[in-house]
Image (cartoon, rainbow, N blue to C red; front, side, top):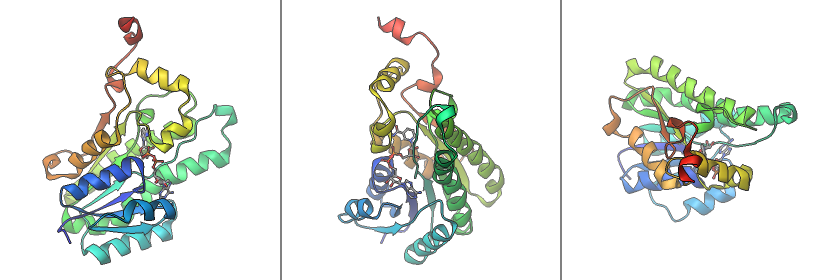
Length: 250
Ligand SMILES: NC(=O)c1ccc[n+]([C@@H]2O[C@H](COP(=O)([O-])OP(=O)(O)OC[C@H]3O[C@@H](n4cnc5c(N)ncnc54)[C@H](O)[C@@H]3O)[C@@H](O)[C@H]2O)c1
């Protein structure tokens, strides 16, 4: 068993699984948390130094039990990566309240609940929280009323956490990924959206799960020991750019 342990939510696939593997490669144990039991078993069966925990991050009782299981197993918690997320794109007028609530429940309530539940353990280790937002939380775009608003709220929640938890030596930061070809993104990115992203991104491509994981693991690590309350856009330059890229490319 390794000395340090970090909880990663939404760890069964995509960015969460890439983050899990990168943490493991750096000698850090991982509590892999996901509400998709089947994917979680598949993803975790060949990995060492992990504890797979089936948990819906939007359910307070399940979150409390999940953090208890991780603490009992690893004896300490050094970090929390709030990565579990869902996406649903649609026009404002067609965004039903059930959709709005479903997106907020995982993307925002989940971050609030997991962070709150892990604070006592993080006080003991002076650990850190990394929340996964999105470029959709930094800049508004079409069809993202629920998703973009949930991610903008995660950015503000990160700053609240940094402000309050700094005195306990706990850091809180946020990664805002650009587009990555995961199951979540491919379910909502039409060909038009894919083309629009290529046009709007200086690096002219989607990112990889591993590239996002590198930013997350950096913010979890002691290399980021004086960084808190920040939002790191791992986005190929999307957030820094205005109009003109397609004209330049022509
Ligand atoms: N892929 C992208 O383009 C992109 C861009 C910006 C931000 N993000 C964010 O990155 C994070 C990871 O997304 P991804 O692209 O890897 O998606 P993904 O769908 O591949 O993985 C998300 C994981 O979260 C799990 N999950 C969903 N709801 C959950 C819940 N209530 N409780 C526990 N687990 C739950 C899913 O089962 C899944 O394993 C999300 O927060 C997403 O919003 C992704």
